[in-house]
Length: 188
Image 1 (cartoon, rainbow, N blue to C red):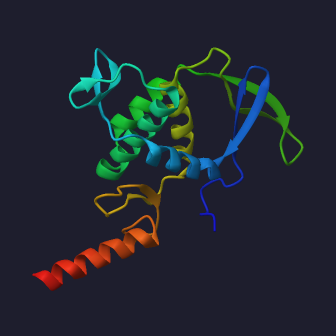
Image 2 (image 1 turned 45 degrees about the horizontal axis):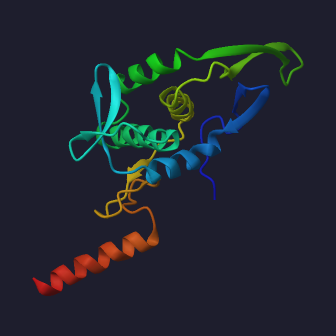
């Protein structure tokens, strides 16, 4: 069952290489999956640029799809740990402000002309950081990450969207956690 989100009927568009691509708030599950696929690197800002660190060394060559996942992972960690902060909003705004938007005149449901202004012009090939910020910020604005949590199983730590009392991303993680607690009680 899909979670009801703010503006369920909102679609966002990107225009790149002559193609118009639509996506909606239900694509948030794809962003969650991408964040959960991110390797467990540390991220630091050096000389004003975010860089990935593994075992104290800067990772110089990271495929774009891995970088995309890592950025999403870091922002979701920030939300789970600190909530939605002004610093996060400022970081996203500074990044997405570099993306140009196209305004298209359309007829509204009432038959009146109105501007459709959520079409991002990505023909200038924005970098991976800008693309991740673009996707993440739109879903954040739609409320797609309300109820964002990190699985409480220490060896999982996947993100999921759940009710306030949910602690685990899946039934298997919940079962593992309960079994471990029971074993610990039985031994102790």
